[in-house]
Length: 486
Ligand code: MN
Image (cartoon, rainbow, N blue to C red; front, side, top):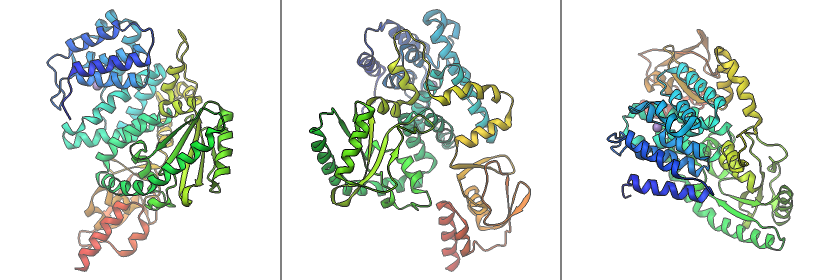
């Protein structure tokens, strides 16, 4: 790829803004760009690129998310008070109170340098506080984090891993709670590569073959549905989701579920068709037609319109036997639901009436203010929220306070191998919170795990394989067993 220039990126940004916003005065954006450019002049990113490219990338993402102009302007200026000699007062003087408040919010979110639970707790606390002040601060932070992830290769490995982990565990989880499927997927997919490189490679290897064999069926089914629906006078759009549009980290998490057991053929929504229609009644009508056309799999019809997911997600899902008995998932939704599934809380700005104040209508958001009050000095409450957000992962601590995250259902041996191979191979026992526990003990979030080892132990025993949950531990046990046999 040809290296980009600030001029090129600036033109792209203006183009995006013009496409999404009408009758806006762009002078202020130009002014913000000039201001940021001057402030960061001479500064470079770790990658060697001019710093302003980062500011532009953040603003670009915000423009693509179709947030309002003050947010985009704040995106351009977000690193000015922290990294340059221009103070926040200067921004306030030039760009007004609203922009200054947003930039100040980002600066306050700041850099987090805690370890273990402190880091998670403090990171979350800051995010929640920022959110309840003005949710746009967190949206800028997402855009900032996303570009930092994209330029991660320039950083030393330990820093890279820390940022990637934090993105996966904190940022993506919050994006999910805010219903922002698009940002969540992007954060996860980039971070995935750094946090679980082997698993990432594995998925990248098995996927393309599978898609290829499914593609033909998908195209045929798509045509059939179009033909059938053409007679119905509903203006529909059919989008297929596969390959790039399907997020690979969420697929990976699905593969780890016990009922799937890493078998790709058991995943029914690997390829899916998305049908977008104008109204809610069209959704149900189209569902009826689909079921006339193809036999649905029992138990796979989900009405997230009548019962939205906790993060506000709405759609009808059904899984059918389509062309040649090929199993395909079909999702039906309105334009508005589609927009909200991609942009979540940010979609609110797309519908904002002129002059009205942004007020998200997710029930979850209304709880935030309440949460925030309780969070301030209640460590236990904070832990509870953390547990709730990171549902299918558990967080376990070493006696030194380092935090390790494992899938729900992991056992002491999983933990031991997770920390270090030799800790696993020389395992003779474990204590959870000071109490001796068995091999089949299921770790709980917050457990402090101490592994007892014996340096004379030759290696693992075969039946450990029955007690571990993670593929990482399984692989390490098998490798050690093979070595012992030789
Ligand atoms: Mn930044």
